[in-house]
Length: 209
Image (tube, rainbow, N blue to C red; front, side, top):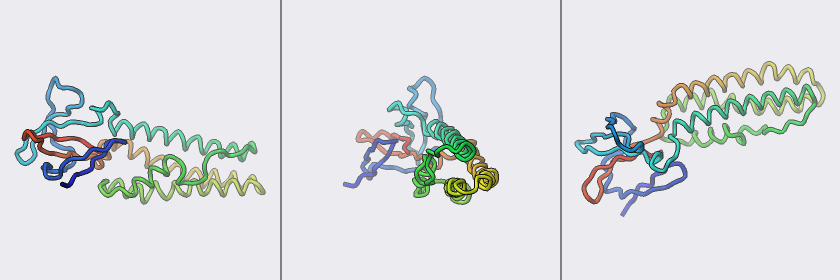
């Protein structure tokens, strides 16, 4: 017997492959009144009408869109603080305590994870590959240049911050905000509806990551 492994945050579920009707993106969900919050509505898939269940809501997790919005806010604040501390480290000769490794900060780790996503929407992937990822790498790498340069030429280090650091920072933030504006499209490109039949012959559609 073969099983399909499903993921919802850090939880894993398995469904018998033979019971699966179809796997598709969330769409054409008809809402129904007076049902628990985790029931999103009903769908008709190949003539199979079944309830759509959000496993995230059933397990009292936040929706993926909410988590991404909170993550984006933290990314914007974290990188704003990063630039501010870099400026203070040069102007006030303080130690710089934040990471200079683009893969070690939360955004870098998220980018590394998303870059392996095979089901993500091409539009978003191109934005990450062409805009966010290269400028984010340059932001951190230029930060290292600033720290090294400040040891011998403080004025030159300040100049790098005012030009190159802020240029890369502005591009990263602009594109992160663009993702925030299209958060529904982003989550729809990641999440899937798995439609299957139970042993009783009932059709169930579950929303998974």
